[in-house]
Length: 577
Image (cartoon, rainbow, N blue to C red; front, side, top):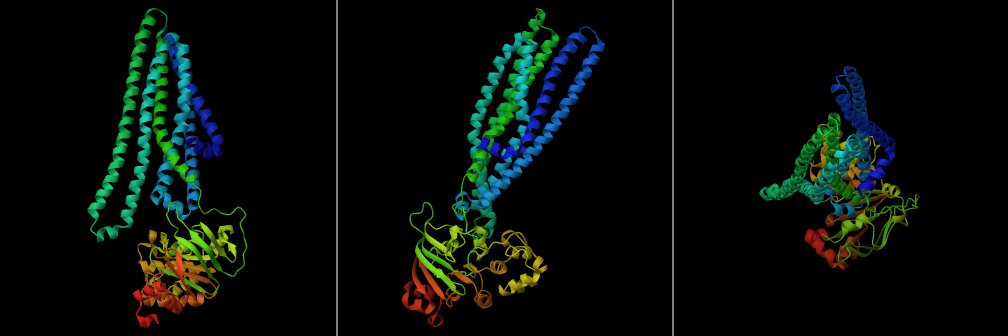
């Protein structure tokens, strides 16, 4: 997967990559030629006392050094440009792919894991690309070039390289083989720490209300300890590398000096050749060491690439049609025809053979006990989920055949858990209509019974809203979410238990204000409150995913025992009548 990601997202920067390779090649050639020049200075300049020769060759060495520096700086610059562009493109692609997921895929991976994969995992692969621009390209060139130049300087000492290089490769390979599973576990534990932190921050009130701080502290401490222990195990393995490399380098240098001294004494080698061979041997081992650092990064990047590839390789269960319908009539009619829905891996369907119909100007209410399938039913209309049986029709067209933008433009959804984004009151409302004027915002707030509390805020429409809307009450969040949907002026309104946090008086005023606004629209209300729906044109009673009653309030009181039980638990006999 790592190779596929690199090939796909580095392809647009092939010219920059070629420039980095050329620059690294030129810089490495300069670095490899310097020891040979140095050997000539020793053998033909220092030994013979030829100052002019020393100055002339020294000048060439200075020019080679400046050229090497220039090539290295340019290669590092282009390498950084490539890695930053790669990370940007990969994050953007991953974000767009995740945004196309249905609720099923989001629940499968979990929000903490999706965040980690789009941040930490992408960063690991990006760091590998950044290092590749300098180390991964330069190391093999330097290693191969140094071996060639060392053999060229003194073939009699080259057998030492056949000993030290394989030993070093074996040590590095063993450590890298042990590190891969540790890095894989580390990414899983990072997900766990993120998940627990999100839960504890979001649920801090519940934790404090039930005095669970010690238990939550222990839970986080365990997750943190698991991550720390795994990181330490990986760190201990990494700590073995540098001492091993230094030990092999020093032992090899000592062996070269020992054997080389004998060859110089016997007249088979010169001092300059021995010095150059030592430098080339150091360059060979340095290239192996650079490859080692890359190997330390590759396993973790490979694990991260697998996790990223898992996301990119997962298709949404809600697939846009290949040849979408882009125009439909404006009747605003919704129909569910023999709809069945079953979650993957579940033993039983959540919904069974549900058939309902609501036309423009009508209100359909769905009521039932917790877990009856009300929210799932509502989610099928805007295709947050797709049916596993039957069809959902909008104006007579299967929603799976509609262009997604056309479908969503017809719908105003107020979810069960209204979510507000960090920003201002105005920026949250304009998610419904980006071009809405301030007058439009105030009008929608007035209908949603939110104008009073917004006017009391110090900055009014520009009052700050924290992430998730945590700085306003639950009822205020619901009313702001309703105002956001009203600004859209949709043909279909979907209210998913959207009045649960409102007191009865506010709810009554809100329902009265909504009637003239939604008169020409189809309205579907999911609720557990009888007071919210007893004046609906049609009430569907769900029990265990099956419609056990369908009709108006008075009809259901006489014909549906389940509805009668719900009414009896909430209203007096006089109120019910």
